[in-house]
Amino acid sequence: MAIVCQALPGLRRRESIDLVIANGENAENGSGLTCSGYRKLIAAGVDCVTLGDHIYRKKEIIEILEGQDNIVKPANYPAEAPGKNWVVVKSETGKKVAVFSLMGRVFMKPVDCPYTKANQVLEEIPEDVKIRFCDFHAEATSDKQLMGRHLDGRVSAVCGTHTHVPTADEQVLPGGTAFISDVGMTGPHESILGRKIEKVLSATMTFRPIPFDVATGDVQISGVVIDVDPKSGKGQGIRRIKVNEKLAQELEDEFED
Image (cartoon, rainbow, N blue to C red):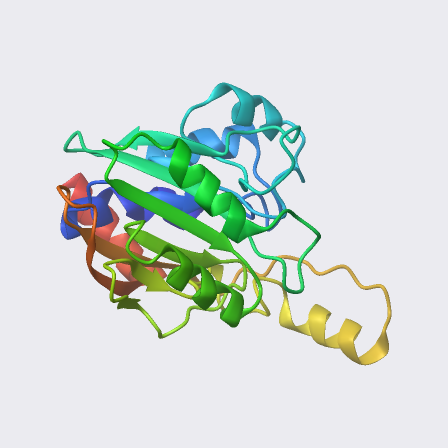
């Protein structure tokens, strides 16, 4: 979270970014999101927060999920689960953007069908909201690619999260949906998915119940920049970005000048 707060204001200005969407489910020391963490992300320039299978690790976030209009739960969670299925936020230039999240089913906890729920969400979003973004929080690359094809031409972008490792398959699908299987992890890259290498390796080799402490080395921001036609809502381009600690300092210095 610290590197996001440091670099995001400058990154928004350098890249002329109108809207920032962040998956914040592991922002609080590697698991869950607190109320204060949510407020820090918003203050740093995040416009909308999506979440995944660690959504309720910090129970206090329920207050934010029920009270704020720029944060969503996975829409294919039960109706009784706290949080909104979708929200509409405004970009810096005043454009309306619908944001929703879905959870995959392959190697994940049991949830309702994400494909059927995606159809329902799109029917609920007002027709005048042309720009529509889906965070598909899933384990299997095939599951994510299927969601991209399922929603191609009906949303501006489908971006995968959860696996922590960025993929190199960014593309604009034939119907005009920007897609990537996984945007990658914002956090310590000298790690095993954000955890200390030696702890994970030891537990894997010995089966001992060793806690997986959060790593601290080589902190980076991973993400994508997406270009969207505001009139049609079609994706026009998508490219990966990566911000290391050196670049984060440069961005902070630029913004303060």
